[in-house]
Image 1 (cartoon, rainbow, N blue to C red):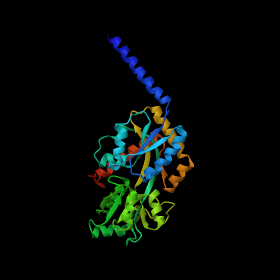
Image 2: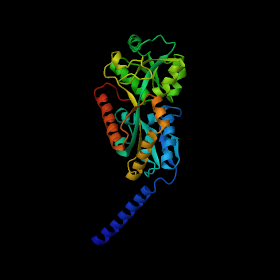
Image 3: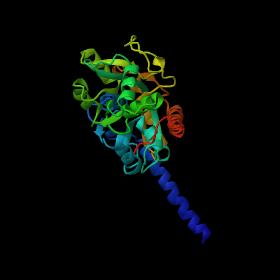
Image 4: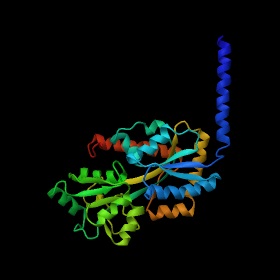
Length: 324
């Protein structure tokens, strides 16, 4: 009886493994879907579409971009982690909120267990910007005003838990002041109110904020990275302005459902690495003053886990509070 059952189990297991291997070997045989869990027109959307085009060249199939915004990127990430078929045909283009949310919000999934890193792209600094007509000339001016008028100094963001939100909360924690957060549906929606001074400031990634600064309607007080950007050499870092330890970059990378066949993950990884070498992607990343991060899935996985731990440590040390 045992031998008969064992034989049946072995046949079933072998069949499943052969089916899984066949899918991987023929991958991809149809168009793929890249889920971007953020609003239209934002940095993830713009960057994701460039990658989709170039990855499609390498894969020999179209890569369709599907926007699934909501809950700071966690809605789309959860759908990829929990509900899509783990066959490699649907994957996620995620950002820093995937790591920060582990410690800062309540999730219905665990990115470290339910998703597998595929490839890293880059990290992009943000500019701290105010209206060109605002009276502030430095970060310290804003901090002094926040201390003198508690609750009156506001900052707009792309939504609760996004990088543009956390960058402001991090500065407030280090400076010992409370800025009032005003969430919007995407970073682009912040600018009309920022320019009109209905909100005091914003922290926006270089890809979009640099355009606004060059347009003359807003001015940059500081950059969030550890070093100044070549594109804005006169804009100081927040750390050098008296807030040591402040460093905030928004990274981007690709993930797939945890049960995705390894060969399929490797094939998507290869397509990302191909895209990173194309002129179109290089130009887009250079425009955003992006810095490379570990591109391979193994090294990017280490990078992601280290980022999760960094934000967990900041929460433990109370340098930033969990989000409600």
